[in-house]
Figure (cartoon, rainbow over the protein chains, first blue to last red):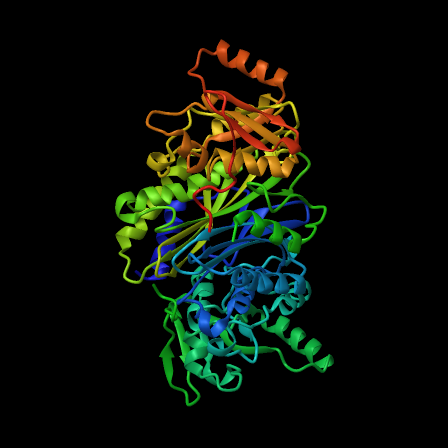
Length: 298
Length: 298
């Protein structure tokens, strides 16, 4: 079953979530009313041994860290700041104390780094190691960025150079600083973090926004040893993919230039009418369709 | 590793969650500040095939239902009302569309029953079927009930007759109506839902409250075919176990009597000083210690 069909079906069955829900199924986080100034962001992500990591390669600590990092990334993609997590772990019978401690070493390490509090959780038996983290964060109302605001004629940008998901997926730092910089100073019309690959993830933005896009192969900033194919379809880079108007992008690049930092934001394409679909313009001008499935199909 | 040691260690490492957190690790839900009148309740529970259910016996729909029911029960145990859930599922490769639909049939069925909205989630591959539901609910500040308020001299009560966890764990109805009745009309000093067994669960209340308890075997209301041992140590009945003062209990029973309903609340013991420990008084007067481990030890 294709994941998109599944999400559409679930969304249809879920119906309207009511007026206290600003965004629900289909975004990085659910967005609920909170107070006069802020919305509450809520996401849950599951890591499963054999799907998202191989324990012998990864080690417990890195796995614990990643389980939190992917949730921070979800909150960042909405323009917000994570505050609290709950941690639910399923461990195979006979798992040693030191192993569970290792998972928590990773969890508490990254929580300290990002000032997140662990406020609940549970440990269960499971034949496969599973770590499920749920996060609650907050975003100032003006800074909320969803997947549904991309408009024709805007530019598509990405943070980068795009990291190599195959190599770095356990140790990546969520782009929280970049997300807060963008949501605080610029009009960003849509944003998503790249978990499944640039192609399926920009595809999600286009679906939610009712538009198409055209990406330029030569403009995608690849880190060393990363192939274009992996950047497009492997994912796990957790870069932020976002859209903004042309003038706004000009302002962004002027500010970045004045700071003399290494370039962190890159224009990789543009938003086009829905009827034009999702295409990739190759380095030598060949036009191909972007596929919507990443490596994480069911 | 004993679960209690693990929770103590995690709590110690988590440190103080800050002033916006009313209750954190060690209760049924994390309790966060929300608005002038209400707190936000947040819990996450994982069901794993082979640990919490056997798929061939249970079927997909009942498993989906239970994954939500256990979370409703957590919110009920704090005196509150569930509002929203996210659903994260790990399914073995090749799982049929109809199977995933079945899980969601169960989920949406119980959500409709309890007026809960599904606002997010994800589906992943996993060798073992795993369903993780996270719930957000709300409780009026005055109605919040934690595990930490039990006081010496109070009575221990339970909803019931206590259901048979072995037979009914997939189809139980969370005691939400009873929880709201109690939290709205009575001073309940502590509450927990029975997931691991009356003994370990009253043990958790006693630990959090710094007290001991004495239960009376003959007072525990067993449903048909339920053994005392299963009531104490098997759990999965999801009854509410709670404490209140003697006068308050009198008021409760007078009201219940005036309504001419089947009895739903039962006094099963009393709270004693911590130094007296946790004991069970047998039908013929024999005194034994209550063990703190249920069937769900790691």
